[in-house]
Structures are given as structure tokens and as C-alpha cells.
Length: 309
Figure 1 (cartoon, helix red, strand yellow):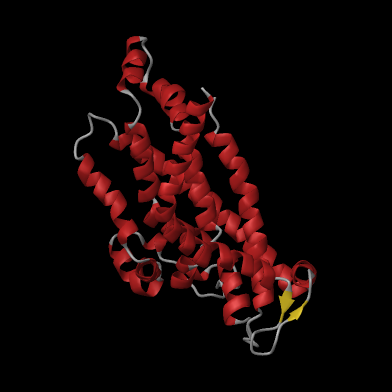
Figure 2 (cartoon, one colour):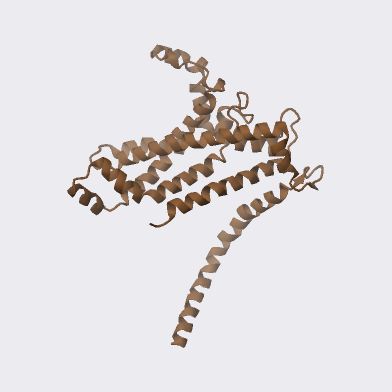
């Protein structure tokens, strides 16, 4: 028996090492482009200066100044709040409507499902810069005002992107419109993976469509809902391109559309106005805090949604 166990253990170890050469290239690129830059950014957040002027060790001074210096703290907390608004808008509109559309697309009695599925997913294939620029024109009252007036929609003619009260909401809705196809397709795949036996048994018991959705479908796709929420959380806290396309890196007007991504770019890469000198240490401090915020959000969400009942 001991020899048999030893032989089995040897074969298992051999199978593991047999796959190791195939994993090494992926592991190499992961360390080179993911792990090492992450660790190096954590190190860089403890320094001040640039590679040109010379760096000096500052410890936690960058983090302290980020939360205590008025100009840094005001911009950071403003961008932090806007990013949460951006994320919650995607959760409430993009993901909720994605679930509604997926439920409709998986209804066997619905006609033209392929057409509607294509229409929902097509915006995902557009470049963000092109989408943002086109919506910027559509939301410009000078460009779209005459057309909307002829349609009797003159009440929609207003500077949506020039008003601090509506600019961030408009950008969030445009982003939701473009990316709603991804959660929709993920929900469609999850709903189609539910066995027909559950649905048929529920119908025999006299359950309504609403009861089937709430008591059977939702619990069964909970891991997918959690994964989509996590992906939305991570992507929205790294959002940059949509604001850059529709406004600018300063989060115009009056920093009302400033997100963590634009703040990081402005501080760590481009340099703050009016001096325009980048501060990599402060920029990586912002990125480091964002990394820990993401960890604090992702880990509990994984635990709650992916655990087995």
C-alpha cells in the first residue's frame, strides 16, 4: 500500500511539473507587466522628486500631504466622490438594465432576439474616444439645437456638458450606453445555463414568471451578478478615457467630472496646472490608495457572492 501511494504521489507531481513549462511564459509576462509595476509603484509612492531632478526617500509624506494639504485634499476627495457616483450609476443603470435585457433575450417567445442582441452589443465595439466625441457633439446645443427644435424637443437644448450639475451624469450615462452589452451578454450566458427542469417544475407548481425570476433565476446567477459588480467596480475606479473624450483631463467644468483616473494622470503624469510639473510620488500615492480601496471592495464581494450555500 505504501508503494502504491508513493507511486501515485510521484505521478501527480510529474503531471504538475509537466504543465509548468507551458505556464512559465504567461507567468513571466504577468510578473513583468503586472506584478513588478505594482510593487514598483508601491515603492515609488514613498519617494519625492523625479528621475530627472533626483528622487529622495520621503516615507509616508506623500500620503500625509494628500490628505492634509488643502489643494491636494480638496481635489482628491472631490474626485473620490465623483468616482463613487460614476460607479453607482453603472450599477443602478448599466447592470440593472443589462439584467432586464438579458431576461428579455432569453425569453423563448421573443422574436428577433438576434437582432436586439446585436443592437445592444454593437456600442461595445466602438472606440471610446470616437463615442465620446460623437456624444459631445450630440450634447452640444449649438450643433444639435436646430435638429432637436424641428423635432419639437427644444426642452432638451441646453449645455449638458457645460453645467456642473449635469456634466458627470451625462458622461456616466454615455458610458453605461456603450458598455451595457457586456453585462447583458454575461447575464444571458448565465440565464441560459439554468436547467429547464427547474423552470418546468416551477410552472407545474403554479409559479408565476415573477416568482420564477426572483426565487429561482436570481439565486442561481448570484455568482455572475457578483462578478459583474466586481468588474464594474474595478473598471469604474480606473475610468479615464470617457472623461478625456467628452471633457478634458481637468474634469471640466470646474472639476465637476474629475475622477480618480483623471486626477492620477494630472498629478503623476501630466502635471497640475499652472506649473505643469508631474509629481510621480504623489501620483503613485493616489494609485496605491486606489489599489487598497479596490481590495477592500473586491475581497468582501467575492466572499459574499461566490461562496457556496
